Length: 399
Picture 1 (cartoon, rainbow, N blue to C red):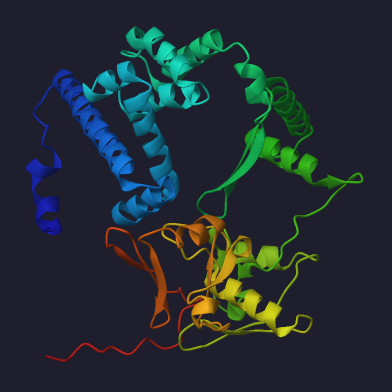
Picture 2: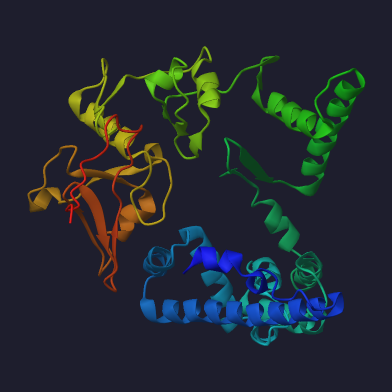
């Protein structure tokens, strides 16, 4: 694509410049219907592939690798497609016609996921004429009302499914998501809000939003009447030069990603942090050894592989390697040996996937390589822990 030409063409920049605002709104509405129909086709194609592709776990990973989605996104979209094609015919019809988009279709699928097929079908029929003209929140509210109508015990079961989840965002920030009984969540928020507003009245210059978040963290971390700073174990990867303030290379927090050097220094300076010596090759930036004084060699090798890999080496998976299983690429029974080149870290799901028919996991020239049942090949070369001191040699011929 000639990007500069596109940018310099005023007709391309403003294709609807001569249209009235009403015409633009009409076109926008038409485009939304076209996009919705395309979304429906995508969802149905995924559902069809799943029905013909065998084991669901295998389907999710193979699709994620081909279209570069996260496995979580594939899983959600696949669930939507299977629900629509097997349990929710009215919602599917509206989706295929472009009358509702994927968000509103999901607003029907997700709340009914806890129901039997018969109950889900009943909810689908009840809300068939309530989908058009509503936003996703309104659709979800209407569906929840019908879910409780066809399954009065649903609320009790749902309250038993309380959970806590951390969702990593950008720039060193993560979101903590807690599914709690309504009265508990409401009381917790009210307490944080009350304390935050009291501190604000007393002259605290933080915003109410900042105070609510800080109060919540203080309450959660309080032990024996005092607030303890979060413990920082070094699954924080950080160049010594940046630690000393000589440069600003970002740190890497396992399970989250890169964080600014200033934040990494703050975490590293906390008194209860635990540091381990990690030696890297200055030319490549890859780890070569993990300092150890208390582990026997097999445990040291296991820890080294986890530090080297940082994350699961499976397709589209970013679980921290500390929660993974180090596995022999060549099985022990097939002559595999226990060394750093043979060991690769995979999470429990990917560890199971490599034993399914059609999947091939191997290390080629030191790079983990995965071949899917339909022949896609995915490589996952390790990223250096810091920028190499000298550039890699350029093998490109001069002519």
